[in-house]
Length: 202
Image (cartoon, rainbow, N blue to C red; front, side, top):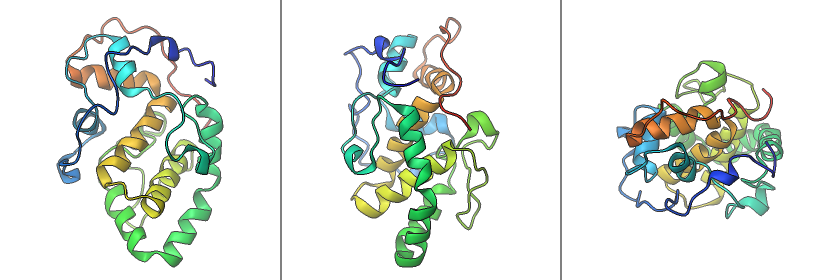
């Protein structure tokens, strides 16, 4: 899926992924990707596939988009861009920002969903306790590169960082993330139209 994403046509104005106050979210309370979606996105009232897509699928350019050369409208190129600089930012932060590295390890080893669980079977955690990736598919280093970069270069809270990672995860695994959003919102998952299982190559 590129800039002509088939998902874009489903976006409604009823829901907004940013329409929920997450300032008081305790990351330690989140035990799965589904928990994270329920806590970080406005899933209340989601009843249809279109509702779920509007909540979990982002469009446009995020505020960090220019600096990272990424756009929600081009998930494949963004995937390649993020995955491509994972090793660089990882080594930089491990060497020069030990406090940021420790914060990253603390967050990334929690079952909040920063992972490639829908293609690689690692569930909601995809790093070891020392911060090393458990899978080398492009989706995993891409999400972790984003997490590291946001920790180093923004004042985002852990909850805000998880939310951004899940926005990208939804673009790369639309079928599973839309289904999860429907499930936690209490919607009907029995009549889901066909959505891509995975966007971008492993």
